Image (cartoon, rainbow, N blue to C red):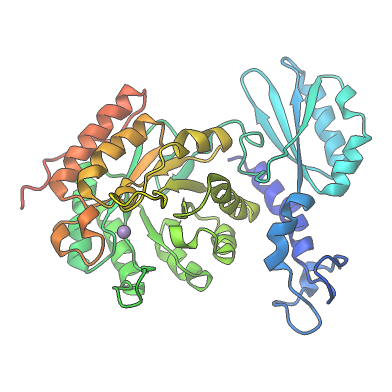
Length: 417
Ligand SMILES: [Mn+2]
């Protein structure tokens, strides 16, 4: 992503955003917004002030306005500059997108700018084809805002480009030996990113909750040893800085997809985020969750379909592969699929991984364990090293069939078994 774009997001947009998040005078939440300099905003909403951060999501649609200015094919540099200059005069932030055929200018502003634009006569400027306001509730994540696909860099690995990326590792970091052993399997098998939970949000409070910081240290050691970037889950806003110290990518789990404080917190880090779909979330809700992260200036978000809850009980969840092409149509963000949680059964992981790549997913995330029968969590859906190796071969074959690339195993796996 170009620096200018980030500057726009961080400057213009966040400024707008923080204005509405500034304290309201007490009284009904629909009362007037009291814009105060950011330096004098109390840290939390106490006493006379009511912090409206909680309500900000409700206001987002009204306060943020994005208008796309579509230039005519062959519009000159001078014409483009002219339009940008006018938009900036009005007060818009600019995101310029140069396609092969035509240039598209994203103008990011508030209701005031939108009103000013309506009377600016910009439609009649030379080289302008049309003005299109983004009507969807999600704006920064939308395809209208950004036509070209976003490529998210996780260490040296790119998600959303030509390569189909495989994220693999155990459900949970159980011990140093278990993780290092699995990391070797992932590395030899062609996995690009190592996963493993250090903090585990479990359905039961009596289930294993994770090794916490000790687990993060083990993950960091595995990264050093095998050169694999690491993704791990962060379960609360307070832990974000700790997890961000160790991990290359922060995972927001299905159970936290609408934890808006967490979404903002991971947004502020600027680190790549793996955003899992909530098990009962619609695609639109999932995209709105991503919008929270982008609204903090962090465009490094990868969407992860991991199955939804339906009436079907034969599988742990119903893996919604519709979501892959649907989300790709609606957003510029990369989409990956987690067939382990999506099915809950190791025997279904490989076929669904193949299907995901065939459907256009930018990657898959799978659980791998050296001895699944001994796994502390999610053993039944974990692949053995040998099965992981076979899955990689098959996923690579499908990737090539759909015109993409994927790493293949560099060694036969599972021979130790
Ligand atoms: Mn798991």
